[in-house]
Image (cartoon, rainbow, N blue to C red; front, side, top):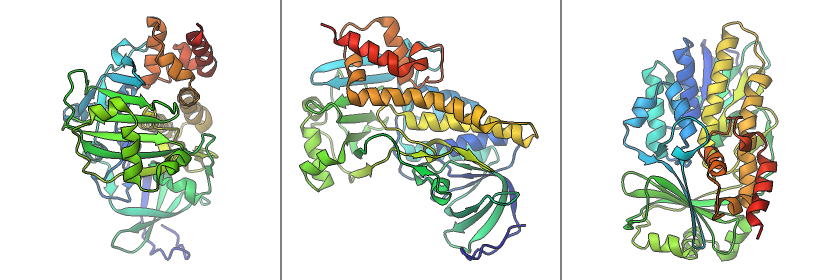
Length: 421
């Protein structure tokens, strides 16, 4: 039986659920499917209705393993998304390509570049097909973990607030970061504040050398910490974005459309590639998106994906980390609900953080220039390039890869070797 919450004027509903997941995005839908398929009862509370816009459109091959675990691989493969076989890096006339089939780690060699509105809706539909209940347009507004069971206060779009008790809560709310806000878990990221401007365009790219199967990451010709992404979709459109520190953007002007167009114009090769493009969608912005928390779990809850920590979009790590956290949490929670002794720190947090720290080392090395020196080195050794390629493919939990185990030190040494005359 739910408890009355005077502060939120909740109308008590005698309702009890086994597992509540906040958010129907990739981590929420994957975690729900995994748990439902293990015989548990899962209900997702989703604030929005799907389809809805989101960024994070370039998946990594490691994602495919988690999609397969969740029983969604056939649906994703058959959906008609743009194939992604690698990444192309460009800077001031220098080109460097990484093909995922050349990676050090065994696993999927390809993935997809997806419109997230369609992709997220597909995963949610698959979770529902497996028996997961999704309550659309309902928002979690309060959470009480002081009792024997978590008590959640939920606000539907067009009905009275109500309360639900659960055995356990997984927060997959992404940038909404619901439990970190409600439980005062938010912690400042140690990354500098950066801002991204982005949009979708009809790209009209007509270039024989352009490979739609690769994401393009382009470094600004003068500012090495400013970079662009170009993510092609299968319908002739693409996601286009730029990342920079806010102060640089402010120097250009105060109109986002103007700033965006000016930065695109400053990169000659990108401008040429998009000379026929139709900019038909408003410019969006995210500022200060890097985030962290004091803890990824507590009594009766755990945080998945961006709800816990988000690094940076440069290597498309967000969805990969989110799905990995869903996979780990589903396994631990399954055993906990089956009365087995579990340790969330050792079995969820520490394994997840090993990969996150590898991504962190690569993101840091990208912005300080070390990784760029490695990527654009013109005499790359095949074996080392394959190890770097595995990281770019998302296989950051493969401890057989030397650049996973000692990322920071190895990257620093490798960059110094690449810079030697």
